[in-house]
Image (tube, rainbow, N blue to C red):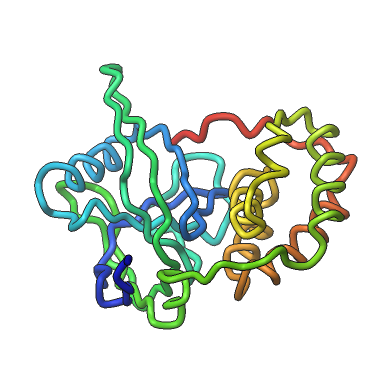
Length: 227
């Protein structure tokens, strides 16, 4: 039997990785291609020095959409997700390839300026209102699975996005919702709204609305995420 986890199991001070248009859902898996010096330092500190506890980082979006490098003082959204590094590769080309597994959402209670020696930012994080993220219950199919799959098929076709439709059909509904919220190339504000939904049923309804609004639109290829 798996022990129940609580917010006390997570650090209340998180090194954060701000990226526009990228969200991490609880229990989702997010691949990242890391190349900025400050974030290479962060990964090394998470894996080797003990400066970052438990290999746990915070994924969060800057409030203003930024296609270039995110400034050290860029305002951040109030809600992000703590994730643990579960895969790591060093290809030897000055980049690290990692995968984060989402643990729970957090609310930022304070921001901390970057350490001048390491370059990355920290926040004070509170997990209390997202305790249910840590111990989700098994859900039956929520609202509109058939409608969601129909719209997803149209949206993926319009935007030339490949999918393993057998795996999609077999996926638990809440896992499917989390994956779509993370991987579909919606606007950063739309992704943040999906992240902040109370539960997967609310997130499913929002996804259906977003697919209905975005079907037949042209979106960029959601290839490897880079930073």
